[in-house]
Image (cartoon, rainbow, N blue to C red; front, side):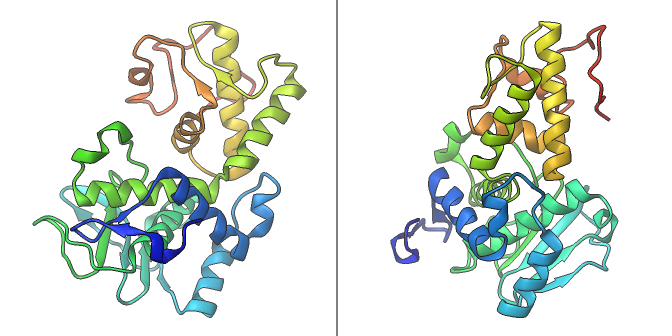
Length: 264
């Protein structure tokens, strides 16, 4: 991992980070707060991590407020970097997948964006506060367009990549996919193929539900993570459109044979 002194910042105060640097920073964090997550596939102990951040680094958490809406969208979390205060909307406390990703997203802001004040646009304050709506948390961005992104979009992309790496470390995800496929007798172990063949579609749904149980994240988060890691191969014409609205279904009609565990 690059030393902090080696990190460059753009004119808005946003760190210039590669995917590899973000992954390395998340893994470095886990090595200090939840080392076992780097060794075995499992749910990240988010409540314990929050307690450690509070006791060792003075990070405060507020889970009791309703954060309302911003631009008509539900606010899931907010971080006040100058105060080291993270607020999580009380409505998601008992929704493990959303709660885990939102907290990890805010930790990503803390880890990546606390060094300098970031100058956002007119719709955001420039006082070290970042308010995250559902659109910001787990938003999908085309990294090939990064040079044209606004400062806000760049920091949200960075926080989402950090959150995914913290909750679903690359090495354990690869190992768990391979192990599950071998146990299922799937020959193309290590890759998940999605096309219009019923068997491949059902295997896709089954591995997503298995990983959802292991990591306690949403299906959408898993699908994006598998794509980023090069594990998911859609093999569909303009395949991204098949995921656009549903978050998981890659085809428009369910196959006649459903997997043992059906998605929500």
